Amino acid sequence: MFSVTKFQYGDQKSETVKKLEALNNGKIIVPKWLIVVGGFILFFLVVLFVLSIIFATIKKPNGLFNESCAKRICEKKLGLVCKNQICSCPEKQFYSDRCQNLSTHGQFCFIDENCRQKEESLVCSVVSRCECTSEMYWDSYLKKCVPRKSYKENCIGDQCKTSLNLDCNSGSCTCQNSSIQYWNGKSCLPKKSIKEYCSETYECLDSENTECKNSLCKNYLNLIISFTKKFKADLAYKASILVPKCFTLNLRTVKLNKSADDQRRKKISKSKNLKKFSFKKRLKLVNYLNRFNQRQLETQLKTALSFSKDSKHKRFK
Image 1 (cartoon, helix red, strand yellow):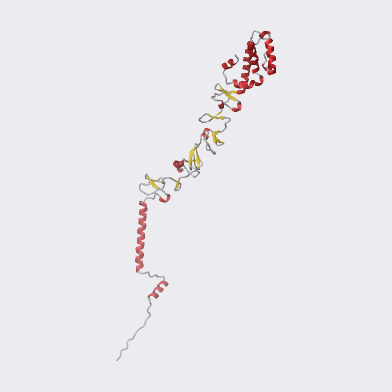
Image 2 (cartoon, helix red, strand yellow; image 1 turned 180 degrees about the vertical axis):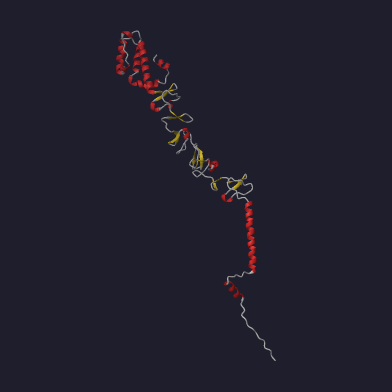
């Protein structure tokens, strides 16, 4: 009356077991959704790569120093800016691998434009350092180059104008060697030798005992010797007029003193040859001889050099 149903049992594998078996057999099961996502990503990367190549060929690189910036920007990493459609450094800067601030005194430079020309009057020297020109010196207090000092101006160190042959001596700008140089109002010049043209005695060389006489440098000692000879000759000439031939005149032996004056006056006044002269004239002659004592001759000659030839003759009348 009752029917009996028969069941057949079989082994069924789960999905996890199937995946493990496929992995052991070298097969990988990839989900469909992952394949779809991966495909989109790959497509996007390919499109991006193609666009970057196209963009790179069309777009120009940033402008470098001194390059045109009419259709592109300048390289900001180098500190460049666009001026008059040219990539250059900003004001008060110069380019050395990149834009740098202008150099001050003693700092490195390539050309004059690398130094602070306007503010500090600096130029680039041969040793590639910012220095002052030869006509200026660096003032550490004012922090700039200032003009060098001229003649007789106060100075310290090398502040004097070397172009004028000036040097700082005892805090004042004077000629570098005053014994062989003189200041003519504009610069220091070499002093004149004998027989060279001059206007003042200080223009003549001191070492040669020279003096400016008649616009020529002449030896002072030679002037004294020649004047002494001429002076003695003039004296002998005048004495020959006033004194008879029997009265011998010898300048080297005329050394009268107070005790000898009276004896000489008496001797001259008693001479018959001098009777034609008045007593005053004879006394004048004796006093005249006394004045030219040999010991005082050199001192009198120095004073006499300043007088003209006419004044010298008038002195003996």
